[in-house]
Length: 217
Image (cartoon, rainbow, N blue to C red):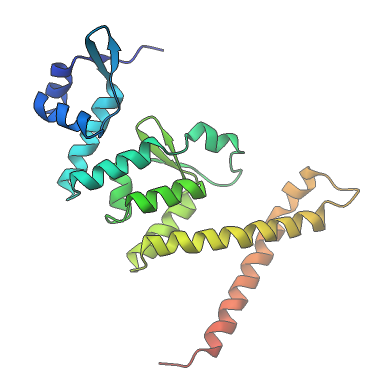
């Protein structure tokens, strides 16, 4: 595997289309990670260039430097994708790789530091170099659809935390039911579609009961 290309400060600024003074400002504001130092020489790499391009894209979308700094801090302190997938890669969910600006577009500017931190804490997001990885395409699409319907992303993430608690309880209930003395984890994996069907049907009927009790407008 080839080594990453490295740049001196002047070279990096030129590649990013900014001035050296702006680059120094971004570094002082901790919008980019510290460079690698070799004596008195500071070396930057492709990750720094990608971050600078992300900053430019976010500025074009109307984000302030203060907001970008907060996002950068949350991004740099996020869970690494190796740590997330090391917990057990999902067997049916498809992870999605996004740049920070793509994530900002998906959620119409609601990818605030608070929401990003909540998603990282839930395990929905992890970091991988300069990218973010969402653990589930289905959850990402559903969350984005709810935001498009006018539901704040903060409320979606708060509800997700409560759903997680109920889902864990349901998974524990089904596991206890299936894993009797003569069954194995392979049987649990084989029978998991039955658990999903029960949960989907019960949720559907619960929504029916709730809607039937609500007065018509």
